[in-house]
Image (cartoon, rainbow, N blue to C red; front, side):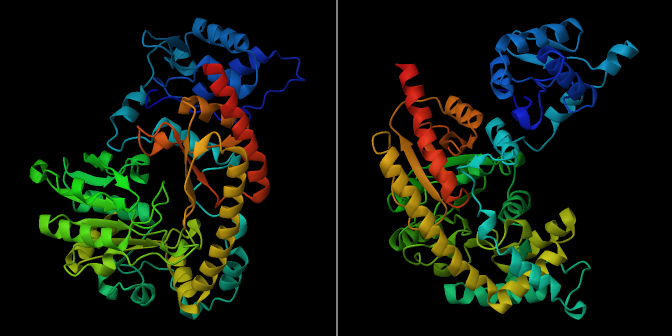
Length: 494
């Protein structure tokens, strides 16, 4: 599938009127023509296959074929030898009798790589009404303290809030609260060694453009969340995936890294790993720190899930054991409080933080002052800790319920382990089923999945299931329906 292939969200974007005297073929033609005429579908974009479009729109494939034939005759689209159909003109270009601007060429030439097609579909499909989001990595709306946050803003004193630009490292009072927050976790972070960022993803982007060169190597767990975003690849960097065992990233493999290929840095989600849910043991953490210090390999520790423990608090972070300033530590409020606040932090050696702060100012001139104020109030007042305790209780209920459903419906179809915290169950399917086909079929049936291939191309037998977003009722609907889909696909393949 090409990077510029267009994504369709079925009836969410195109509502076919089956009571209209206008034939369905004409309605499909009109929709595609409008998308091209308005510039939504640029010259050079590849249309979805006729089969996919027919499934999404719930019409016969012959209806879509007839629409494609008519638009081909009009000179708007054309098939290509490599398969598929592309937009080759627009209505304005036809009227003017001249070749229109090829925006597709500019899109393809952009430095920042596009998301994987499946990721783009996931990002779009999350907003389809009534879709069951069975893989979403965030809290469901009923677990976000919306009322408490509303009261916080209602009671705000204009004297205590500044809506101007904050200093380069972020609001000082918030950085002081982050420093206090991390101290009981064993992380000594002077406010001057803390940089406030707009979420963990921005932290990674700042590191990619501020500390690493093109051609640098990122050593990471395989699978990993980082494979699902292109923040490092867009900066011209390579990934070097290392396997995990039950204790986490395998140290023996780490010691074999060849550092002659340019700058090398290790990235690890050591606690409630995304997507596997694994927790690196204390012994493994110490071993990795020792090996990286000996090899002079810096470490990025992504610790955004730490406060989401369910059975017992996790081992101390890599950063808390770091006595040489070798670890850059990333934290966030998004997973516990609200993803919409977009507040996180980087803790590290002061010269590194100063460098990243300068780059951040060049990029956005600081994170939202309003969000920083709200984050500081939540942490200072104890609201964050209280809500974290509530979220842990609710996640325990949801996790146990999902595991019970899996035991009933998937005991003969899959294998999995019980996560001790975080959001995810890493489900390994036994039947050999094409992940793209399963994804498409599930989506057509109102279930949004996160297949394992998003996190590792070799993880085609896996699904990342989240018990954080889908409600109990939605799990009751989705898990049996998912079983039925998998059984049907397995039988079709035989």
